[in-house]
Length: 295
Image (cartoon, rainbow, N blue to C red; front, side, top):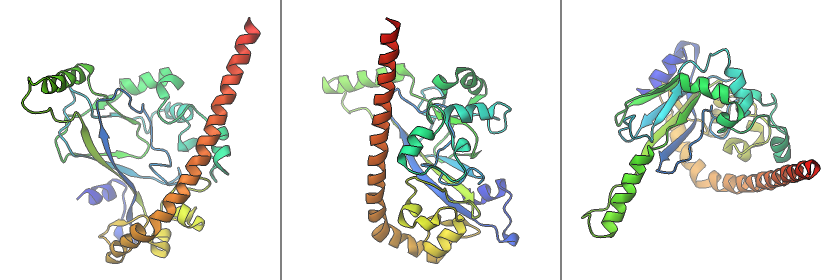
């Protein structure tokens, strides 16, 4: 039922040979930590399709998520079409602002990507962040409920209320001190997110860590249909119907290809960390120089 709804929301039509594919999926869990990613749209690590490609995110709850305690999910209603939406995209450097052909390498991505980072709208553009907060909606969700939202709708995780976290700590201390018979259950809320896109979605170009491209660089710039039909089911078809051949092919991806891809990904992440470190050191030098010049 979930793929059917996603296909209908995107206006796909099987008579036109339209297909719906899983572009990315991820299991998420919010613990009692205070940090959350601020208002954002998914970057290429979570949605590896060109910005011109539409999509629907199906956000499926694994636990009950009442709004009061926190640990849930908020959407900024209407932010995908708001007049000020590009202010938000530029502030965080979303994929809407990426070069059409992507970045050349890790250094180019670190030095050329605009904005202050995917999760940092609050500090990068406080006024735009307030507009998100004004349109915020948090739903009372039960286990198994699904939120469908457009790819470009801004969203964020809601941290647990600090009093809830404090009470949880008291219960743990009580158990350790012998005042509680059973340890309290972990303070954690789980969800499963599926990023659906039409088979015409274009796989990202340029430097990155997308598995299908790390395996075969020629997959960049091709449609999800083309990649999955010719190089294995990297983006499994979920509507209309599933492909038995693709289901069988997933086993080969897991058993034979992912180990190779993971090693290549590690090398790229190593390069990224090196350039990020260099950038931070350069920023520190500039701050030190500016401070000394004021003295």
